[in-house]
Length: 261
Image (cartoon, rainbow, N blue to C red; front, side, top):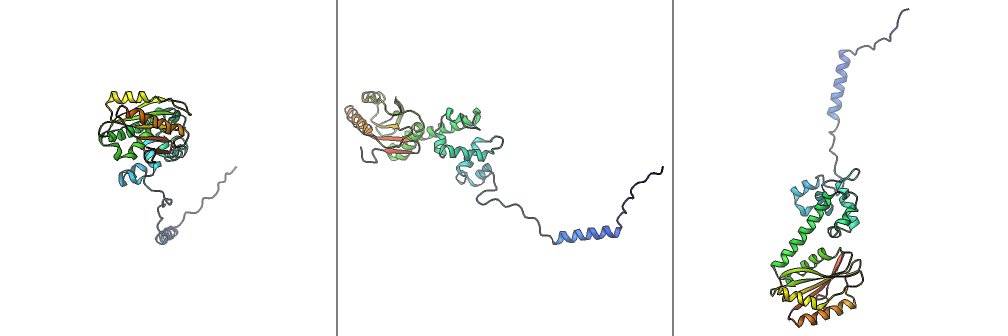
């Protein structure tokens, strides 16, 4: 039986090929060149690390700086998006930097130790930097630095702590000590113990401090009474009370600046 096959299409002639090529070339000459995709409004085309190198750290947003520190995100969550989420949940960089290891561990994307230890290391470096500054100059010349340091030390604690900055005769920091720990509602503070420690350290002055966990940075009647008791007790051993600072997450209160000392 004879076999049949579909006829092959005719090959295009040289003149057709030439016309097609000429037509394509003509279209290329008249078509405008494609434009590169423009970045969205407010979004830099550079990655955070590139921006930091090119423009300096001050040019970066909080999220970009945190993204550099974190390094990577996780599946479905790029590192910049992870940084933005963390800042939103912690109320900004201050809240994040005051979090402890247990709190950070509960966050998705921070379950492994690498990112958490990086954040905790930066927090400790910030503490040491502020502490070094307070040791090198009189603290009364830098009240903002004092509050920032106390924020890092106390603001994120879930329990109330009474602490003291012991100062030398030039009002430079000798040491910071967390002296008494209480519940969310009260702290047992013994003025004679503060006086005893001041004498042992050779301190000439102190700054008192405590935190209000989950509250606002305003003194209660008990806080004011305690401050007066400490003023009286420390005056007996010739130790000056320079201030009593109350801190909470997001704020601080200076009794000296408010006229209570």
